[in-house]
Image: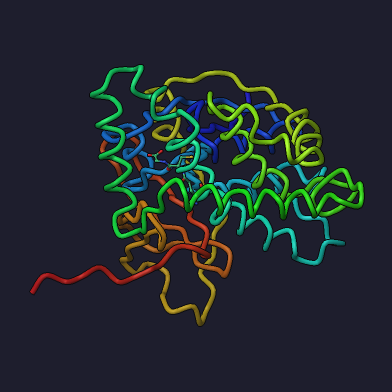
Length: 311
Ligand SMILES: N[C@@H](CCC(=O)N[C@@H](CS)C(=O)NCC(=O)O)C(=O)O
């Protein structure tokens, strides 16, 4: 049985991004289905505060954010690479754009225009209301573009993707797939699930053919696991992935710190600093149920602060 545990939910686009990586790299893994909205007691037992989806667990190491999960999967299964050296870094730039700007056009468009809101309300009007309130709280402070905005935002970016494929290349950055493909594919996947958007991709034939190629990666080999069992696995683990605190990055090993995302879902994660490099920040915390865990975050997109002292 694989020791990789992906905590995800089926309709989550960022989970789909990671599932496609599992497929590309033919990885076997276990999956825990997490709730789509708060409360998430079993999630927080492992993360200590991070509520976003997905996150990945290896024993008592918890990896938050799809970007860091992809880095860990790349180390575990280097081929085919998500970051081919020949691309000289542009794959990271395109992936970051797709995970942020494209995603934040696709999500509201699918909800407002694509009928996903109606689909959620099929689960009961209270569900839609609770979901809306949960996401409003998670994204408090963000602008809320309406359908006229998101339609233009989305088509502009889909046209960019179509033009990237204009020379007949099979993947966004050339002849081989990379992280940019799975980052862009999660939004296309989400839009294609929207019941009222059947014709959305008609003006984008190259993009449609590209998506067929990317979705053919599949999802690797998942097998289900309960959240209680995942917490038990963390509790029983006594070893951690190697970590280091680099000099000159602002904090010393052993310092109490608070780590949080800088964009949305900025819930604080408090712990003792055990790892800090330009790539990741790692805190150690002890949970009543999960025991001693190391919670890893990417450094990009996350801030590290000293806890506020109460005086
Ligand atoms: N930067 C994060 C973004 C993750 C994200 O926005 N995930 C959505 C689901 S696709 C989420 O967390 N929704 C709220 C939730 O699951 O509680 C990543 O790359 O993993």
